[in-house]
Amino acid sequence: MKTKFPKIVKITIISVYLIFLAGSIVRMTGSGMGCPDWPKCFGYYIPPTSEEQITWKPNSEFKKGLIIIKGETLFVAEKNIKTSDEFNKKNWTNYTKHDYAKFNKYHTWTEYINRLCSVLAGFIFLFLIYGASKFWKTNKTITLLAFTAFFLMLVEAWLGKTVVDTNLKPTIITIHMVLGLIIIALLLKLKFNISERKRIYRYNAIFNKLLIISVIFSLFQIAMGTQVRQFIDEQVKQLGFENKNYSLMNPSFKFYFHRSFTIAIVLINLSLFYLNQVKNLGYKLVNWVILLIFLETITGILMYYAEFPLGTQAIHLLSGAILFGLQFYLWMQSKKTVSN
Image (cartoon, rainbow, N blue to C red; front, top):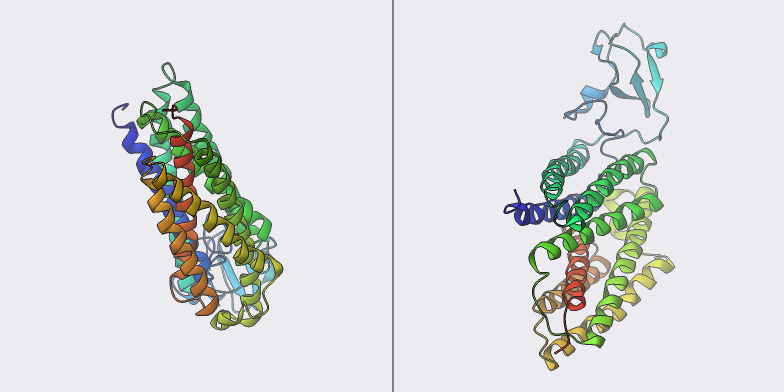
């Protein structure tokens, strides 16, 4: 298991980024409430494919726990029911966690696939902690990092439920996103410890300090971007999803700050690129960081000026998460060096 552990760590990191991608598609398509309950979806383990399945009908059977929409209200079956000719409210309870009562099969299945990605990652994490437990006697740090990341994944699952129960409350979404980035950082630390701890990189004090600033800036920018995205979602609720191109006609201060703060991020990372070239430090990941900065900037411009072209939101969010990961990994490489 120890020989396969580095590969397990890589697969775990990919699985978490897959969740980021699935989540970004959910946000892009407005599918966050495609399933009104959690972990089931309208009370089903496999979601409904048509509105007929969640609509009250006379002389029909409904199993306990199934959710229906009737009169723009969600009702939950209290027991196995065989309906009569008229709706009997005594057999149903109102779903009180939120009042969102709409069905869109595309939104439902988009959200469901997002949840499946999380379940897949959960199984991969079980392999991770099993493999990490083998290192307890020789390297407790590896075991502790893996189990901490697994614990935070459980917290993420709870936060995912809370996001749905609170009908996409902005604060919970932001915490959900930031915690996901922390999990990425823990997994990258784990990868670094098992694969690169014996390597020596050229050290530069200014480069190292700029990397710390770049990591903090990226974390802050992503958190701020989540708030901007929530503002857009609120606008979409008022204007309708088909009119989402109007959602930034009167942007909030957070949007302007998020947009302007990009300048600071670009300058910091260009400084890293310059130092890496001039001092011949040899950090290859810096080139990828600059590429992702460019991608982030372009997708941000397109979303604002070209009215959210298809896919730009997903690319913007995913590239931001990958950027944070690369910067954090670069910082570990720089921090672990010895001066020449």
